[in-house]
Length: 492
Image (cartoon, rainbow, N blue to C red; front, side, top):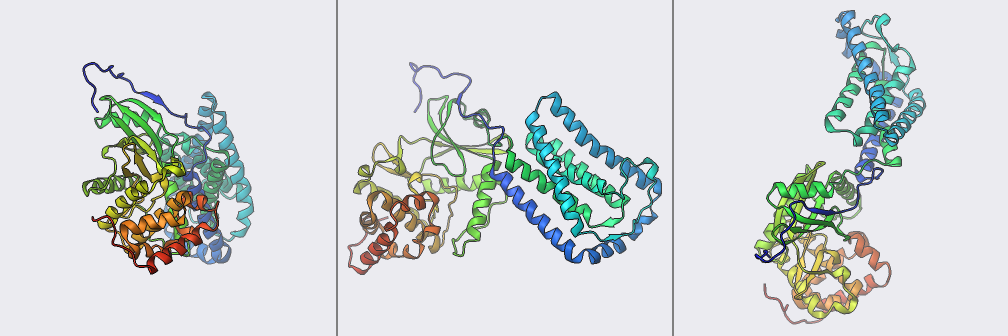
């Protein structure tokens, strides 16, 4: 759709309609960080509780060469480390006060207090000590290294750096963690060899991560302004961008209008979506059933690029899916995919009476095309099937999809579509529609996949309203596969 000479000219600056990012959001990124921190701390504490004497003795023998270092050099390194740590703690507090960021100060203070308490609880579990290796001139040391205070100080530093990370730029985060590493080295050089140096850092990391999860941190999803700027940078300037209220797991959806008058559907993905995907995959990994998941992508960029690849491939193979218009970056550390918008509604927004046999046939025909080319959608719930105003069915959101899919994944798609459509039209009509298009032999392969844990969250929630629906669905499939049936109506 292109504007004519009589069209109203589009504004040079995009009109942005989106919710303001929360300054105290609780994000999957923070939960994932806390889980890793707690796991690491537990492992180290258990090792220290049972093997600290052996480990400390081994490390003491390993670093005996350090005693050859001049006393002035060791003292200088320790002094620099202590000054750097104090600069991070005191300087950061001063900057927060000047900027009146009281919430940041509260989070950092809570993290530091939690680090102190946690350190004092854990330290008695790992209390074996070996003699100090390097010689230090205590005259020039700010904090004596033979006191508990130095260990607590290291834990507080790690906690504050962790807790303030969501508020500060990447270069300052790196500076903060550099200060933590330097403090570890100074603790290692200037104190008796103990297990508590590593414990202090992990305790601080855990305390800081806990403070963020409990109290919240600024949202790290791309803002509407950064989404519009990212699309403009790749040649898709917008006139309007409005955040959509849709079931879009793993992304923030928008409706947009380009400067040329074209209608777009835009999805933005940030660090939080990446962490949510990792947590989702971990949850599926620990399931006792084989769900056929591949390993998570190495980065958010690779995951978004994969979605674009599958969408390109599906469209090129004749499957109705919106054309990818653009792929762009969006600050902070996010990515954007823009698609041509389709006039219509997703199936989860249709009334049951609107789910006619013709609509079901359209949907199953598109699934049959996916199966022909061994593309597994892997999230074929009602929200990801779109009914256009002209009655055509479109498949959207290939964010979890696979090319060259196994029979296992193809059967999972059958099960998801059968279950999700059955929540609107009943088991008999859902099965009849599938059998009419792909045949009973294909439909019966879904039986092993028709279990609640294997279905999407939206479908599970809908099926809980009628506990007898899933058994009815399995019964209808078994009955259809046992009866002679005409050949599938769709020849693909």
